[in-house]
Length: 301
Image 1 (cartoon, rainbow, N blue to C red):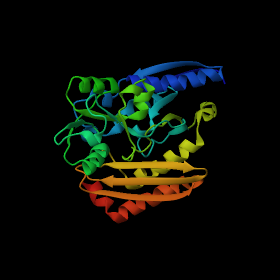
Image 2: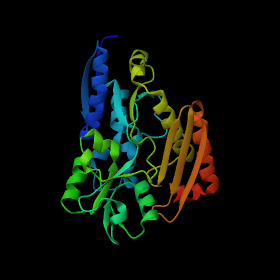
Image 3: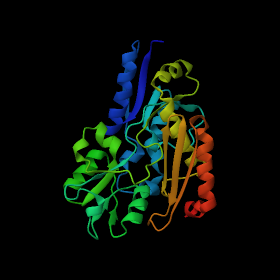
């Protein structure tokens, strides 16, 4: 197979890093010319409102998926945590790359950890999942809305708008901001798919599917499949805090999930274990447990 491959990507620095990472991996295979098609998605354009109010994380991928349907691009590169539980008919996940750090990061000039923050300290995040878990542990803190790409968020922190902010470790590390991480928040359950990069293409593009298969990491994919099964079974959205994280020990997969209230007053936890080949069933099991604990009521709000 020798053809020009067109990668659809968002304009943000992190999205471009991820697309270029895939581009370089494909170039190393040889035989292809690879170009980037850059899009400014609705999620990138509207940064003065919470995602939960304007349509959720899917706003970061719809324009890219439209480019695939319209044959303007051949593949799209996404953060897996931005992808909807169900893909549009005609598209598929061709590859999930090896996962980097799935955890959240505490970023602050003044405070080395969340434990050091005094009552009323201002923490910036746009994630209800982060807000829920932080308030459950530190109810004395003040959570303030924060949107924008990583550089924008760091600039707002440096301008003194927040005492600290919470970002994904993987994004900071990919962009070379390792030194901005003061604390790895491994007590917070990550977002579903956090730290993993996915490559999407048309389901009938068999030649490209064969090429992309070499980028695929089955172990990461099993973890992400289990996590995404929770969201699919719950029919979750950005309007309810949901977290999910799977880890592998040899062939055994351990999945934890949560559903909570935005104020952190209620958090439901569930977990399940099994063989990595049973990822879908394990995810369904965790979702079932959460529903039995009362998740439906939280999801209905």
